[in-house]
Image 1 (cartoon, rainbow, N blue to C red):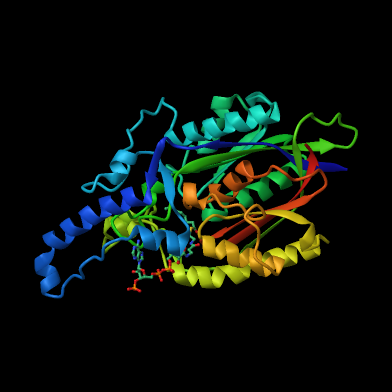
Image 2 (image 1 turned 30 degrees about the horizontal axis):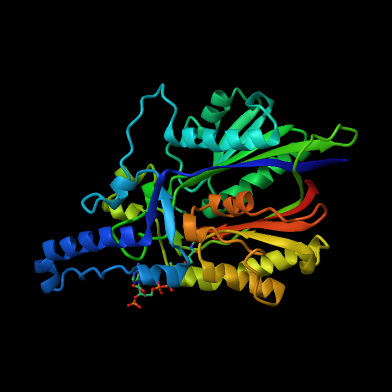
Length: 378
Ligand code: CO8
């Protein structure tokens, strides 16, 4: 019998830390300018004046206190409100491959592996900087890895959907050692001009090294988490959309650039998705024969603190202790698919060998992915 284990994780965090107050100050300046510049149209009722943002609202409504972005200066410049990213030549490493490599190197070091021992790489994220050649293949070349590599996108659920793909490939004998990478450059796709959206996201990249261990193999030394099971589900919804795509320049009538950025009906998402996630996890654990009181940790997708508390409470039948459902949202904001993996990377201490835990993502699509893990070796 072979099993699939997680052997290491890595995290790339950009240097640019941005507080809620900094973000609110910049958007307040930009909004006052916008209202002034459009005063005539606002007075004639052709445009609505934009409301000012509030740091108090952000923390209360979402739990986000801070985020890291790839270019703090560009994001905070009220006349720009988006990152400034140097255009790179074709012979240079792309930005997304670069942050993948940074996270991958940490995960490989933790696993005690080198790049040439990897034979499958899946890059999963909400926004890929180009359709092809795949970022994953660029990373494969830079690491000297073998086998195959491909990119995929299931928005915030990209990490768990990538994990299931990789687990299947390892179990099926198509690969021996794999890397799952989640390079989320959300600041390139956030609407920093509107208070409804400007605070939600942050940039980060995560990496996970997975291996197949066959019966009779000499087990590798060091920490290992057995993947007991994975489960994915999707249900169509228009409540979270990103309409940027290759047909945009062909469309008539053309859309305004801001219509091609992330948008959502956040309240409806929270109301609809939280019970779906709780039920999905309850059923997944029940089908796997794992009672909820044997689950030591819930590494949940990090979009909204209230949502995570509600999901954990429904599952546990009581409020979760902070260490049972760790939060990284206060520091990193929503990093899309990287969020639950950052929680796993940062908060997996204090769990004994043999104990179980859950990694779960949810988001646009709608999509939900859950991974049941058991600590195999310390
Ligand atoms: N400052 C002050 N007031 C504000 C602000 C602000 N920044 N933002 C909104 N308000 C106002 C609103 O205008 C509204 O005013 P009014 O009552 O006068 O109309 C009032 O505050 C209340 O607004 P909401 O009802 O929208 O407030 P909520 O309490 O619902 O909080 C949240 C909004 C925080 C967005 C919350 O609904 C939420 O977090 N929902 C969950 C969303 C979620 O989980 N989404 C998943 C998205 S991520 C994903 O799937 C992957 C996408 C890929 C990423 C791409 C990268 C960009």
